[in-house]
Length: 189
Picture 1 (cartoon, rainbow, N blue to C red):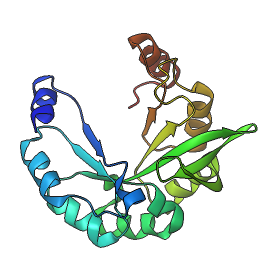
Picture 2 (tube, helix red, strand yellow):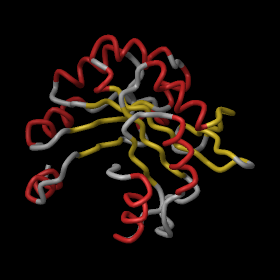
Picture 3 (cartoon, rainbow, N blue to C red):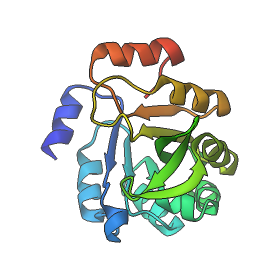
Picture 4 (tube, one colour):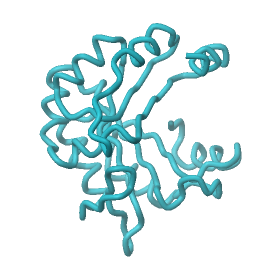
């Protein structure tokens, strides 16, 4: 809650809360915590982690979450994207792709990067858009935490393959890194 207050004071554009262990541990979203965060948050709030049913999407939206992110559940059941978009609106459905470089492309991973899916990241981004995702988050596992810059080639390929608003994660370590991303792609998360 204190972190949300700080982001409110800094007038952040959006807050994304991801419980990266929920799916791996088989946990549901912590609805009480999410409700408390949404009540304090003065900006759009996105949540992801442990979401695998349309009913969970609806419950989270009813608590004040504007966007719900899915990763492993969307890989296991891509139709979840379509069903959720039909119930809560595509603007509230965010597809998260955690990817690792594989040959000349990238493979989607789930469960904190511990499970390879065999899915091509760019093709899955296109599929998510076709099914009704309203936004996409692309996380380069290879670059995550290294603070040496984003994988601009990955971002470019996803950008060219989809028209969705896109957030890029993994590798940012300076304002210059963010500047390169914005220079190349315009306003981007």
